[in-house]
Figure 1: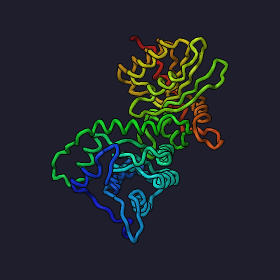
Figure 2 (figure 1 turned 30 degrees about the horizontal axis):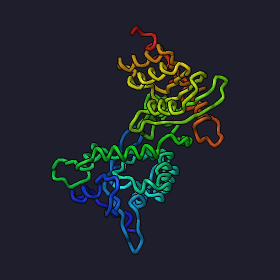
Figure 3 (figure 1 turned 90 degrees about the horizontal axis):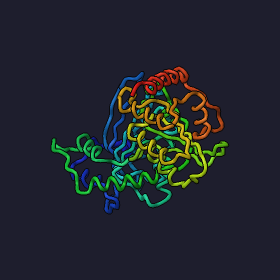
Figure 4 (figure 1 turned 90 degrees about the vertical axis):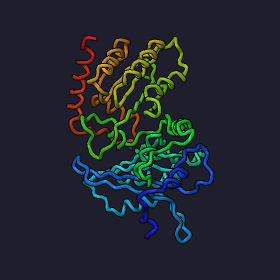
Length: 371
């Protein structure tokens, strides 16, 4: 069908400013635009790059959303199993419920495809079914975020006939971004939905380099709150979303109003070791709550060659917080507690223990180094 494959390379400035204006409540904007870029990788090397714009279109009385048009075009390219694809969407509206389900199903079918979504506005974000759609995308591994000044500026330069004129932000762009980001954080917050298997292996993998398909490693923190006899009281998973996962974790534990006369232990599995600021916040948190015993197991060390990051890890240890590297045992427990594993046993990736041992030696050098 020609209406599915037809798309444009660039937008005129008036259309961009009107359709991508990040209003919290936007009226008269009934068209949805996707500015996309597709990077294709093979054997760790980029082999192609594509970009363009799709928008909603009506053909023979049928309304076809831009998400469906993109997927029809993309799948017509006949994806190769030996190649990896990273798609980035800059959207004027976040996907509707049906499109979110369609895209999530697509991601589940093609494991060599990753998707990042930056949206200018949230579509009917008050309605539960639309919130569930965004959550479904996130659970399926899509990175969903709100467009900030940087994304608007990038789109202006890449997807608009700007005639080299600079991007001029509209009034309240930053404030609207903050409001929308808070709404999205509320939608994608600690839901206790289990992690997808692919997402777990991508984000918790301890390989020194990202294996294909290429993706951005983010901070995920999975925690278990227990009594000293190992009775589970609470558990959950946070990721960086406007605020770091560690700060969101602290807020969550504080909100539980735990009995200060009773002792508890908390086990955290985290993809990246804490940054200096988060390390300081964790130290303050434990100092104020001496009835809590906190154990942190990190899959990887974050900027371990930079002194402030090393000092942060040392401060955690001095505060009585156990800092260690995830081994097969911790990965297996994380798999069993936080992953939608379909009752399958944990299957370690190649060289897991070798990588873990190397990271443990590095951490030991940091913790024993003079301060």
